[in-house]
Length: 97
Picture 1 (cartoon, rainbow, N blue to C red):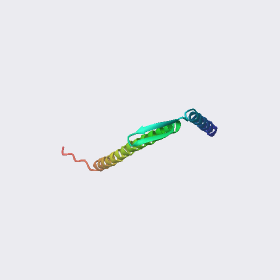
Picture 2 (picture 1 turned 180 degrees about the vertical axis):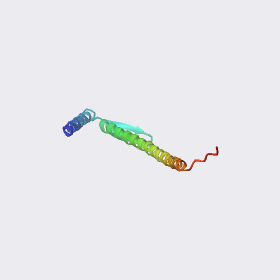
Picture 3 (picture 1 turned 30 degrees about the vertical axis):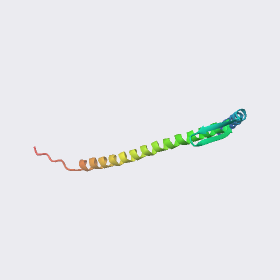
Picture 4 (picture 1 turned 30 degrees about the horizontal axis):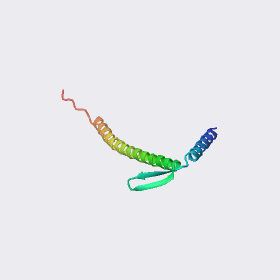
């Protein structure tokens, strides 16, 4: 059932994409700093979305790896502290009273 729903959703998205491409097929010129590119509007929009998605995922991955490094560093520090606590608990108590 889940696969069928995913297939229907995928086919709906493909149909919407094809409809978008057909309705926006007129050529446009995109001017940027190093030159210009001419192509169909739908293709330029899809490329812009893809570039944005890649940049977003790349930024997210940098943040995730940074957080994982921080977690591993803190985990090592915690392990050291727990080992120190275990060592202190095994020391005999000395009472001078």
